Image 1 (tube, rainbow, N blue to C red):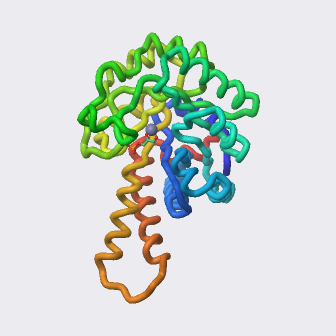
Image 2 (image 1 turned 180 degrees about the horizontal axis):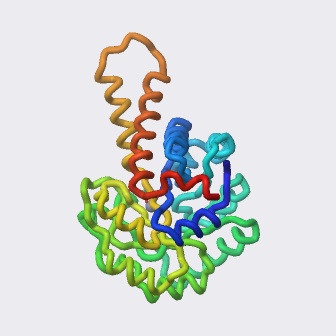
Length: 290
Ligand code: G3H
Ligand code: ZN
């Protein structure tokens, strides 16, 4: 079922688990995500970036995701990932998304607050949840090569700023920069738990969001999900699973021309990755409590 995030996040904040948020840009990815959540009886967030929306078209990708959500027995949140403008947030809200992220972390602090507030006002008037970002999460969005895949100290979320940001903007969840990076770099143990703890103490009622979960070690991810991290974003590992399955198809000899034989196994491969992550995040079996 398509749901608003409020109750799910309240429970995740009070308990020791996080909701998996998985990126999609086509039907197979969305079905792989939903099937995994259904198998594990977990709530799930299906999210689209601006790039995915540009690729598939907002109406088309929303129609697919909405229908998948409506048909699903588990709670499904439709979320805009890394939205860059009020205009994009508005379009997604009008299309039926129940949650949006406004990511203005590249702006100066005061400007980030001012523009984030506009999105919060618009979204809250329509009952939609808002995630924002403070600090910067490096990686595939352009700065990885500049920093060798490591987060420079100046990019980390500052606990005192986080408090001011949350109080000034009225956001519902905050994406924090605590060492994870966008993209898959195997077995990273980058999460700065002392910093996460300090942020959590500064804003104790705020659900935190961990971006860039691909490639982060299972130990670090599982430990993070026992803090106030309530949402964990995974994209690259789904893409890798999808691509490997497609490659395996072409590596074998085949004698028919059928797109379903290419993308069907890719959908299954995505499901396997999502199942592993949901189990790690501790949200298996929690769908029934809403
Ligand atoms: O917003 C999406 C993510 O933060 C995904 O990051 O590609 O490292 O899994 P990832
Ligand atoms: Zn992200």
